[in-house]
Length: 375
Ligand SMILES: *Cc1c(COP(=O)(O)O)cnc(C)c1O
Image 1 (cartoon, rainbow, N blue to C red):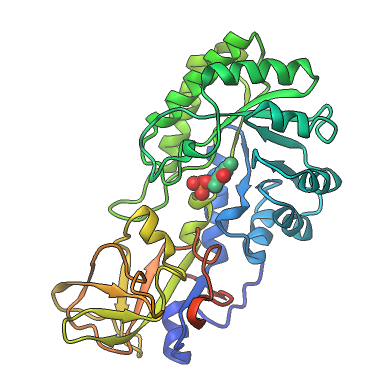
Image 2 (tube, protein in one colour):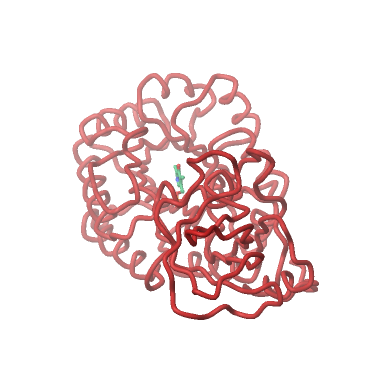
């Protein structure tokens, strides 16, 4: 890891360079600390869901922090991992694959495959011979920002049938689920763990490994979630539900691993007579998730010289830079009344699903992150 960062923090970079484009900042120390929290606290193997942020600096730092397994959904993600961690285990947990993708995954040495249907199990038969195959379970549980069960996964009865078939074909039988992203309710994991134990019993199969997904919440509003209490809840639920037959555990956080390591700086292009703010980033860029999972209250406003803006908080409608009228934040933002044209809004905790899904629509969007010593 580089330690000679030319920029101490986002504010000092802004003061010196006054970027007129949206700029995202990356702090390796924060990422490394979060990785340690997962590795030290989670009662099983910690993998990283690459889709949350596939930046080379993220993958490199996670590998350096000791992560040796990655959840990948496409050959391109596998290749990105292989570039920085040639020996890492690849878990291919996108349950729907083309035959070309399966061949590429096999060539790249995928060790674990998720499925949620017999057709997809048939497709991977040769590529996954003797390897772990995990059945993706979906339950109607609440607690997440939106429903991850809408696309992938099968209910308990079908999961039991598939698990039995996986074992019968000589794969290593495993079960996997994802409670939904930004899931603030540890009870969602308890419901899944209990269902998983029931499925193992119904199928008459000893589940070798249970993947409890991502979904761990990042800090968006209010107090920071305590990851450790989620880990404790999961460990206790597994011990209770499985007893001495407990499977080994895997988790695959995306959001909670990477969110806190990035801060997004956007600039105020104009303030309308109505008080509405026009920023140089919006829902087609680094702020796209605000539309899908709701607002964040972790916003600071600074003047170009780095001074924090004050004054009473005011509620502002916020527009992005493109000429599309959908390019508006879903709810008004609370910003200090002293905000002026040319100021910067710094959004903390924005490392997940920002760079990964930012577009270049209308010539805007995010470039490479600037690395800083602290955020
Ligand atoms: C997206 C995804 C993850 C990561 O989810 P987060 O909510 O970002 O933690 C993990 N596993 C699978 C299979 C996914 O699709």
